[in-house]
Amino acid sequence: MKVTLPENISEITLEQFQSYSKLVERKDLDEYQFNKRKVSIFTGIKYKDLDNINQLDFVDILTQIDLSLNVDAEFKPRFEMGGVEFGFIPNFDKMTTKEFVDLSLYPVSDVETYHKLLAILFRPIKNKDTFGNYKLKNYNGTEKYAELMKQTPMNIVNGALVFFCNLANELQQSTKRYIQEELKKAEKQVTTLKSGDGTVQLNE
Image (tube, rainbow, N blue to C red; front, top):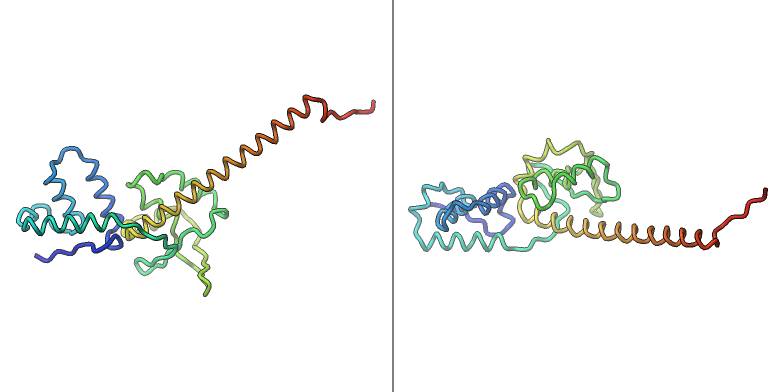
């Protein structure tokens, strides 16, 4: 039996990882049943055929899968899939309201909706220059590309999500600092008015 194993995380698709995530949540399986399903997800071997695999080969396959899953991935703002070149949102300051609202619908904690999140973060590139700058097609919802995004290699997924989370944290901290500074200004203004220093004398 010829077995195709993922040599690294770039050879694991989001769809496979989503199936594995659901498997991890199951509580009704013993270790052997779990491992058989795990191997089936990442190799395509039918579940019933795994009983006939040599035990040492079975262990080697599991080891290779675990090695492939536990590899850090660099952020790549552009990648090609299905004959289309996709680019990561280049400037979050210029996001549309629709993009912003839809991003809030699909939290990073929900693996099941990663394909929809990716369909917002990545869109087809319509223009690019020799310096690596690019423009994306206008955002029209996730319907068109969400299913295709299930075939995204996990190195692209992980790199994008780590970058997005770091960016979101930076934006959150920046917003928090801005609000605190504005509150301090408001409190100082109120204190000044109460002390009379900011009272304006009106001529009657």
